[in-house]
Length: 260
Image 1 (spheres, rainbow, N blue to C red):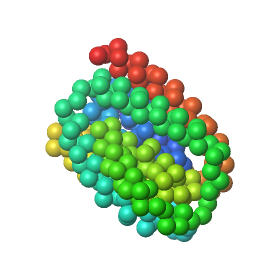
Image 2 (image 1 turned 45 degrees about the vertical axis):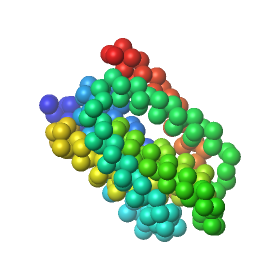
Image 3 (image 1 turned 90 degrees about the horizontal axis):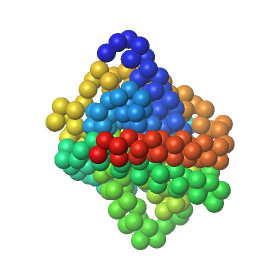
C-alpha cells in the first residue's frame, strides 16, 4: 500500500475518531463504510479494522471523560458491560459465516435505524448533563441488559462498537443525559471490542497495514473530540450526524444489493 493510501486511511480515521468520541458510537460507524466504500477494503477486513478504531476511540476519549468527572457513569457501565462483551464474542465468530454483500445491507439497515433514533430524540429529553434516573424499574434494567447483548452481537458482526444501541439504552432506559450516555458508551466500547476481535483474528481477517494508520488517525480525532465535546451543542451533533448516517446507508445498501 502506497504512502498516499496510508495518509487517506489515517485521515478517514481522524474523522471517525472525532465523530465517534463526540457521539459515543465508536469510530467503526464511520471507519467501516469509509474503508469499504472509499478505500475498497473487503467488508470483513473493514469490520475488523473498525473494531480496532472502536478500541482506539475508547482509549483516546474515555480517559479524558473520566478525568473530567461527572460524565462517565461507571456503575451503569459495569452493570451492562458483561452482556455487551458476551454479545461481541458471539458476533465476532458468527460473522465468518456471512457474505460481504449481506454485511453491507445489514450495515445500511443499522445506519438507518441509528439515524432515525438520534433524530427522534433531538429535543425530547433535556438531561444533557447530570445523574442517571434514580432507581430505574427492574424491567428497564432487564431490557438494558438484553439490548446490550444485541449491541455486542452487532459490534462483532459489523465492527461498529455497539454504541448505536448502548447510547439510546443509557439515554432512554437508564435516564442518563445525552452527553453522559455518550461518554459512558465510550468507556464501555473498548471492553466490548476486545472479545469481538477474537473471531476476526482467528480467521486472519485483521490487516495491520490498514488497521495501524486508521488507529493513528482515530486516536488523534478521539482525543480532539473529547476536548471539544463540552462546548458543542447537543442538538447540532444529533442533526448533523443523523444526515451523515442516512447518506452513508443509502450508498452502502446500493453497493451491497448490486454485488449480491
